[in-house]
Amino acid sequence: MGKVFVLMFLGLLIIMSCAVAGNMDEENFSELDELESFDVEENEVYPFEMLSIERGGRIMVNVDSFGADGNGNSDDTEAFVKAWSTACSTPNSAFLVPTGRTYLVNATRFTGPCADKLIIQIDGKIVAPDEPKNWDPNSPRNWLDFSNLTGVLFQGHGVIDGSGSKWWEASCKKNKSNPCRGAPTAFTINSSSAVRVKGLTIQNSQQMHFVISQSDSVTISDITVSSPEDSPNTDGIHISKSTNVAIQDCKIGTGDDCISIVNSSSAIKMKRIYCGPGHGISIGSLGKDSSIGIVTKVALDTAFIRGTMNGLRIKTWQGGSGYVKSVRFQNVQMVNVSNPIIIDQYYCDSPTTCQNQTSAVKISQIMYKNISGTSKSPKAMKFACSDTVPCRNIVLSNVNLESEDGNVETYCHSAQGFGHGVVHPSADCLSGQDNNFLAGLAKSSREDDILHTEL
Image (cartoon, rainbow, N blue to C red):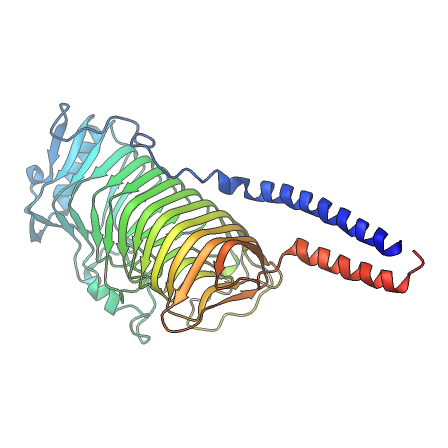
């Protein structure tokens, strides 16, 4: 009778726990469900009809008309500044960089606000000065910087080329005897909203290629970003302090992260991304120098990642605070990727050893769904989480990662979650808090059953 009572009691607890767990899942992953829709309508962030620059009575503001030589050797900066001033102040205008010519432009800030319905049409090639020693000291971290814009369209089949080879050679990551210094970002959109960027090629940046900072409602589509695999710190698209950013149909291959998402960013959608070479698609790094890092509501749907150092990565420094939550990676194929799935709360990109610290950026509600491909390393999945701030609610659904050279495995440290459907390599090392609680409770009840048979 005592055993029957104990079994009934355990059964009731399990039912109650499952009900609670169901409620917890519904609560914890409701935000992930909101990220199911990835398609972005043409007019979702661009608030007016997208007209060809040849139609609709658009006023053409050609940089050549302001004295640009377009021979790739003469400095065309002044002509670009004058043309911008006119285009920005003229309603229904197009700032035109014409095809078939190469324009040498120094570090320049293109500032708004501008008149309505401005189009920036880049069909030619814009190149940066190639000598770091001659760079404008007043703009050490920017080359082409666009700020305070609303409802602007960047489009064309032109090229933005950062001429970065000498900057790379001067990097401490290429040669440890060099001092560690920052370098310019090729193309920046800052403090702007309702901006669309379509069709451009950005290549050979001095450091980061394309930065979106402190902006809202930005759509990027059909962009190509490229630099050599060994070019240091050349992130493809970098998102910081921005919301409602959509990246679609882009091909990115660089010497660093294809896409990186850092602090104070939310509602980031990525779809149909080709990544490689590079360091993969990353959230972070976050928490450096005991800082607060917050990233929420990130969704990637449909990506092909080839020959990269990492695939899908979340990276945080010890000593930070804040959180990363509500992240969904789905429909991703990888080929020959060193670390296909990785969460690293011990990230340390420093010439000196990072000290162990107890505080950490909290990571939770992370879903990997329909992920397949080949791993270059034995650890196809790695969840290296903080002892004091464990990773929670990691979900693996239909994950199949193989190795061409042998067996693969999953590494877990202080990581809690569960698998659903096919999960290979097995992720049994993910601990479940509720399961541990029930197991402990069952063990305790069995001991009570043995010791107190009179019940």
